[in-house]
Image 1 (tube, one colour):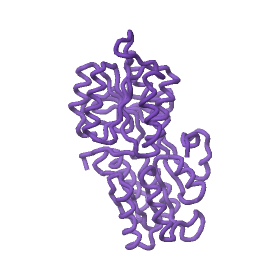
Image 2 (cartoon, one colour; image 1 turned 60 degrees about the vertical axis):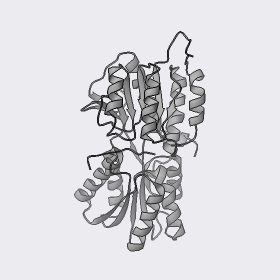
Image 3 (spheres, rainbow, N blue to C red; image 1 turned 180 degrees about the vertical axis):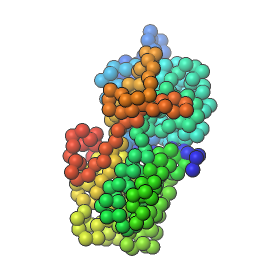
Amino acid sequence: MKSRTIRTTCAGCIAVLLAGCLTACGGTDDAGNSRPQIGIDIPRADSDFWKAYAKYLQEEINDQQLGVLPPTRSDGDEATFTANVHSLAGRHPKSIVMAPQNTMTTDTTLSELFRANIHAISVDTEPEHGTVYMVVRTDNRSYGTKACEFLGKQLGGKGKVAELQGALSSINGYERSEGFAACMKRNFPGIQVIALPTDWKGDVASAKLQSTLAANPDLNGIYLQAGGVFLQPALDLLRQKGLLKPAGQSGHITIVSNDGIPAELNAIRKGDIDATVSQPADLYAKYALYYAKAATEGKTFRPGPTDHGSTIISLPNGLEDQIPSSLVTKENVDDPSLWANHAAG
């Protein structure tokens, strides 16, 4: 499981971000006297999570009045990502915010940035090769652990759980799966976990869940590693088969998701799912730009607690700020601190 390729899941707002940022964010034209200091590549446009991230980036750029180059978008394609970063680097910013989807093939690109004295800030994904100034993400193993602990307790330590995994070659899918498996083995040996790799694809998840339900009519739990791509296909399938019963009703299948998007929070309110682990799209954007600006100012950081409730850890090739994530259930689903309660649903 060592090789990894990230395919996390975003859409909308991008056009506004791409079209409006240069003038709205203090950019300059080629003949201007000042040069934008920060480049940005938007990784994807195919889920609500990344859609929200793009919106929060724009808000932070405006609030902080940052000088930013016109952002690029790589749509999850490795070749496009590489071309975009090279294009941004050619404009000579001091830092570039990115989210490389293939974290095993970043060595050449990041090494070129390092030699050009351009600092790389990676969001959500942890490049395994090449120097990074800072990675901004959460501890993805904790996602799997929190989902496991909730499911295990809800099921009383017994039953069968289908785990709709992301790509095991991706660091996020790998770590969520690893955390979930270790927790289940350690704390809930009476629960049978049926692991279903999906490569972060909703249609693959639906097909594999359908086969699993046919072979295991007594399935009583589901873990969705990415609500942005798995939630709707899973709920549609359960509804079609008459298995989508409200929480608390006999026959309800306990469901825990990951992402914390508005659709998940609404599903918790309706009783369709029971919990999600909120991935902080707002804080990803805020601290990605915080570190991008810090890099332009020559600031350095050390491992340890931060002043914003997170912990910086050492990586073999840089540092990582592990932003906290929270478990969302019916008890706290209306918490105003959850980013999805301020995003369009």
